Image (tube, rainbow, N blue to C red; front, top):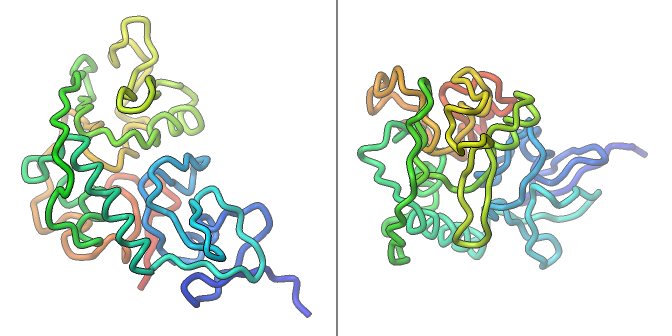
Length: 248
């Protein structure tokens, strides 16, 4: 008799310990479940819904669903992959993601998941939203058009940087990225380019003002390996516990 706990993810045995979610256990075991708002160093957010899995015929978010012994979890099935594709297409339609001109093209997790899921077109009519940019900070530039509301920056700012610089405000389609200062400008916060929050954005919303476009196309993170092989991280995210994740 053994005390080891485990569950099956697409037929593969995944060990876990009590208190872990399905996503946490899968990530620790090197198994990939698509996601954007999850980060192994931060508390789950459960907002992107890309990490949905099937557990006993019920669709749940794997980043918030506790793992249970001997349960059967299905992730890589056509119905869920199609649902994820629609979510990705909706994110592309809801923001303004012009990949060819974006500094993080090739390093972008949203773009990499779109490739991984076989996205070939928007599917939904673009919202063509116009959101205020913020260039007030001497070291950082904010392009809210590319924000996907994952709140990774907000959670990293609180739990990793102990600053509480970034946050989300509003409801529904009015939800937007804010900076916690009296003026509302990033320059009037304690934000620094060295913060974990400044290097955790999965897209091109938070950008340093220096050192951009130094890495050539063809040599970027997802140029030669799909995201389900190398996992979710940025080239400059040296603090991520997910760094080095592979699913070879």
